Length: 149
Image (tube, rainbow, N blue to C red; front, side, top):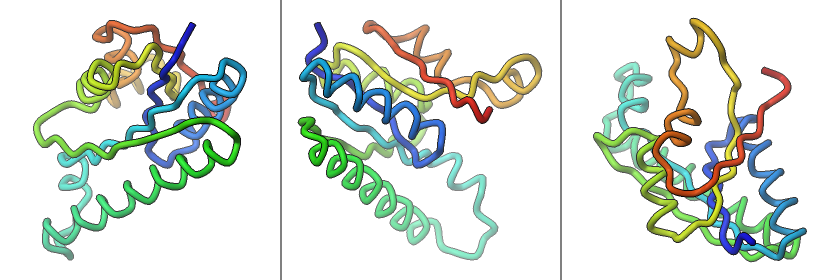
């Protein structure tokens, strides 16, 4: 049914829920996981208070992202699931577009990702990467909502 599941992760509780669901599904189906973290360059610069040079800040975020992916790969493999991963940093690209591009590039059969499930003005103000992935992807998407939201 599914041979490769793309799982975007960012260290949040929401993405953790998506990862956990993808891991359960992969174990049951004998499917491989392809983990993705995106270093969102515009967000990094928007959060900077000017205390660190941009190159140093990006290097730190890149290292953290690589560790997050490595830890998730190790967890999946410890559970008996084949896994690999990548960190992408594509300035000028929207997160949703990078996810869709990676799904195509990695030949994923399914995307499993956490979603905040925002509605109304919060969704309008904060946007919805999950919704934009749904609109742009050629593969099925399983959205896992964080009940804490």
